[in-house]
Length: 165
Image (cartoon, rainbow, N blue to C red; front, side, top):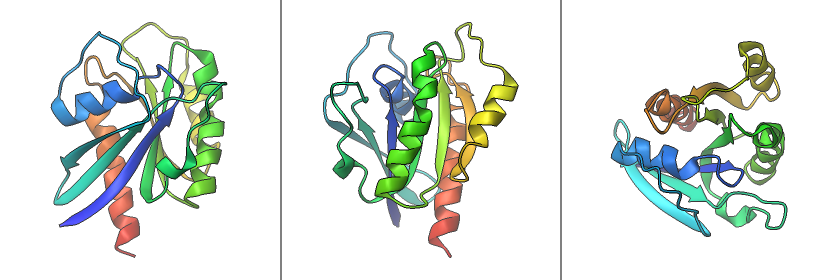
């Protein structure tokens, strides 16, 4: 069976853990649990065993440890639609991922779409056009499940296409 690793990166509190929990367990909790270091979940997606790495969010005081990114076949950059600074930091997360794993595909999850926000569709297009590595930008909600499965399945398809080349 094919096996590979994806890593979720993003600012502290963007919803990385909640997106993984929604995808792997189909559950959601309002209780905030901060990831310390790394947490690894596993899920089988269409005959592939996927290891999903949830790394603690970047803060101005503690950078992401690059070694957590090593070996990844793809990334999901998670931003919080309610916090402009996490959207601005998308570019920094993409840059970091590409420094460690050159050319790895990534998806952008603009999380908490179930909450009132001001991000417009034209801004989605600007984000998507900011890097050739981005295969999809989706407004997601870990709370109600909107676009969560689609997010992981699109990245899975791209990774498998890349691995078969």
